[in-house]
Image (cartoon, rainbow, N blue to C red; front, side):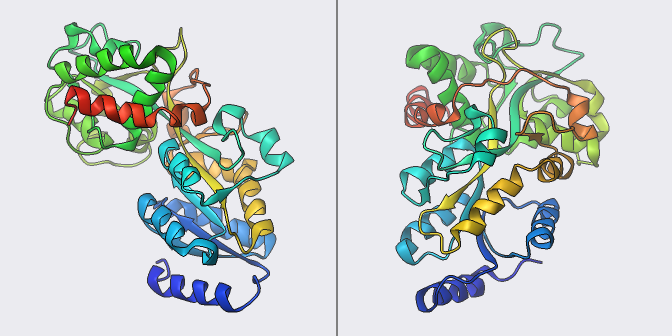
Length: 338
């Protein structure tokens, strides 16, 4: 089990306020909640002798906490999921630029912030799933999801979901706000039910017959290959999948990423940790432990991810996409996407 975040936070804050930065430590604020990440942390500690002190919580809460702590924040690294949250952290002024030849060489440019304040370390493609028996002509692009032929067939999450916010922001980036608005209107018209649940629930909707088409991140489906997922694994063979826009911009990806905190008391250790996350070893843990695609090209895929296959990713700068998230939220509100 993790240490108590309240006790640990108080101890860290007091230590930073009263003493010089401790050598051999790293204070990690993380919104990743996967048990398999334990191996990431223990191997880094074993290899470097640096002790990781963790505070875990929801991304928005951690960002707000770092803002409130200000210059006295004990945080060295913020580790979180989705481009929107990384952009929010940068805009809040709680990250700093990282100068690292290792990160520049290993992390593709489209998975980096333009000012090097955050870097992506694993990818999740947001793709289209469908009922193979009922859908003979599945959507091939994101824009196809708005085609009237799919009226009453689509299950998709709410507009408050960060994955959907980033997806719509990417459509704004590629096609402009007008096309993005028409797309969102079309998807709302095609919904089989009001948005509800998480990504796994969208695929369960196909199994239950509530919908024929859904949108979800790859790692939720890959997880059902690696282990039993109630309401999905047993009927998984009925579901097909499409990596969208393979003849155009490519499939949209969101990511897990991290940045060095603006007032990191252990900055050198923070940079070492980010460089470790880009190592082959850590990249393989992301893939094998949580069914994610590595960010670093050439790293072997876990069997569950390999079963989904390789794809052409959308290599537009995710920093640019993040800049269109406010416009995406405006569009969601305009078209009545719950």
